[in-house]
Amino acid sequence: MSKEPGSILIAGAGCAGLSLAMHLIERKNFNRKIVVVEPRTRDEYTDDRTWSGFSTKPHLFSGLASTRWHRWKCKTPNGENISESRRYSYESIRSSDYYNFCFEQLTSDPRVEIHFGCRLVNSVDGSFDVVDKSTGPKRHLKPDHFFDSRPQNDSYFSGNPDDVVLWQQFSGIEVETVQDTFEPGVATLMDFAVSHGDAIRFIYVLPFSRRRALVEFTVFHPSTVPFRNLRNEAEMYLKKVYGESSWRAVGYENGRIPMVTSEIASNTSQNTTRIGISGGLARPSTGYAFASIHEHSRQIAMSLESGISIKDRKQSRLSKVLDRIFLSYLAKNPEKASHLFLRISQRTDPDRFARFMMDTSSLLDKLAVIMSMPKLPFIVEAWHARNIWLRRRSTSSRVQSFRLAEKAHS
Ligand SMILES: Cc1cc2nc3c(=O)[nH]c(=O)nc-3n(C[C@H](O)[C@H](O)[C@H](O)COP(=O)(O)OP(=O)(O)OC[C@H]3O[C@@H](n4cnc5c(N)ncnc54)[C@H](O)[C@@H]3O)c2cc1C
Image (cartoon, rainbow, N blue to C red; front, side, top):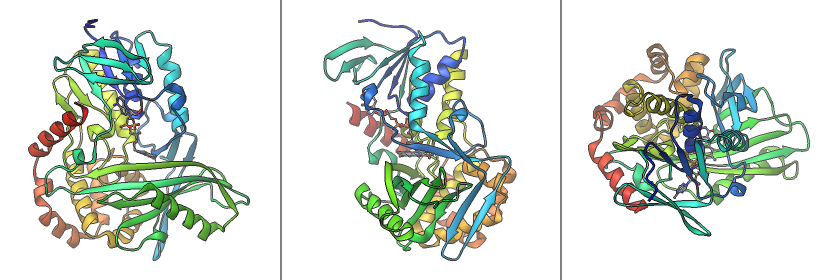
């Protein structure tokens, strides 16, 4: 066995795995081997998603943004609001640019070994086999630290019986139109034109130019909706608003992001850390994960370079409490979502709103968002949902999560 003292093993070369490897090689004093294992071959990577969010805190990949909007819209049948910020933009990074950028840097760094087309097999003694999907066992190693971004099954996120789980599910179509159709300066974050009241449903439009945009049909729901249905809804919307033949699809993306009140622990043992969505990095009230994934990577890389143990991700306690009450309210009152989101965007200063959305808010920002919301319904909800937000850490959900995760990968 090639026992490699000091090596770091990363399962998954998606957003979080690549982000961590990139943050590690950025650290000049970091001299350990970084082994990354990914089932996809390099050729199987596609432009499979567009990551967007507010630019409230620059990160290692900020320079990759392909489009930026300083105005964003929330639209409901009862009115709309356009917010504008000179300081921050809403910006998008194409996954193909991200993958290419990371692979270019990582494959030329002698500290990094990437095994594409491989899977990992765990052994009880903490060692791993890297198995090539076509040629068989390739490598055996016992890393000092294991970072795991492998996707988990749904029950991993469910937590305690009183926890709330909403799946943010979407199907996006990148379209090209024959005529000038879109307003390139404004990103539509939520257009509730497709809302029916039974679930939170809205359209998200990122206009890349007057004739090209990503149009996404999104649902927040406790159960799974097939992507086919979401795609049909997106197509129906496009046909209704832009006509049958005035557009053509040039790309697709599908996603399911957990929005949960359960506590997902990232450090599952002294030398195992979950990263990415599996590490609970998706913000419960919004589903945004991209920026927090990079912040988590930054914190881990700093700890590893300075030889200190990896702590759980730093997160404001007040943010967690607000997120949990908010999510619980949304789950019970989906028909009120459009009014609520419009009200928050109308009554909150755009810079504060952007920071709040990206979890980079100050206490004053949080208070401003609280002040924008209807008080009595949220006080009542805070009382009803006290089991969810009062607990510091849901021990049972943590233990349950580990067990389910171990089972899934054994
Ligand atoms: C279509 C889409 C759009 C999104 N848009 C946004 C957005 O605009 N803003 C935002 O903040 N968030 C967004 N998200 C949420 C989040 O940022 C992404 O899901 C992000 O890719 C999560 O990173 P990850 O590393 O956890 O998962 P992934 O990027 O999915 O990476 C997981 C990796 O693990 C690999 N893997 C799978 N099985 C194994 C195995 N057995 N062994 C080893 N590796 C394995 C996979 O092949 C993959 O490479 C979006 C998600 C999706 C799906």
